[in-house]
Length: 185
Ligand code: SF4
Image 1 (spheres, rainbow, N blue to C red):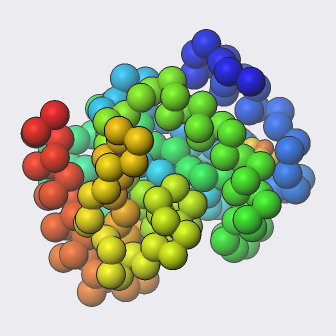
Image 2 (image 1 turned 120 degrees about the horizontal axis):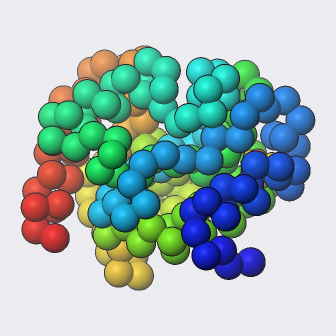
Image 3 (image 1 turned 90 degrees about the vertical axis):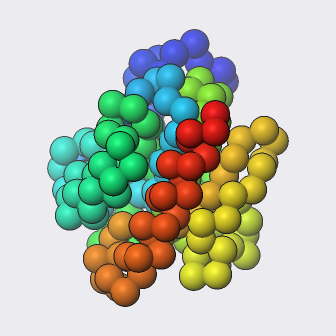
């Protein structure tokens, strides 16, 4: 089904029971940001803090994402942030393929309504789902590919950077490359 607005889509998503992740969620984490954003960030799914508050990337990983955004003169009012699955996988496990597939209809609608010129996949799950099933973050991060008119790039998930801070310099380069691409739009 096609929706006329993000608000309509969010209302439809709010009571979704299309996959088993609905059972333990406290909030559906739909997405936040500018409905006319040029750039959209997509992670894999909500964590504990996100599930509690109903907003994506609000825990420590979200704080780190905000820092990278600030480095390239972006904030959350200028971009859009969402996830592959809108409900928290228990224990922060990876979302199952069938859960990703069930939820993708919402992300596709978000993309259709927002029409970002650049999409950044945060982490392996998002990059493999949206860019290339064999995507390897350590090898392919920071590479832009044109997919049906949208520039797409995969980089490290901020939560992974908190676990492996040695990758932070590479992530910073990816964000600087994103800034350059945005400047060319
Ligand atoms: S994860 Fe997505 S498909 Fe599954 S219940 Fe939540 S909103 Fe629905």
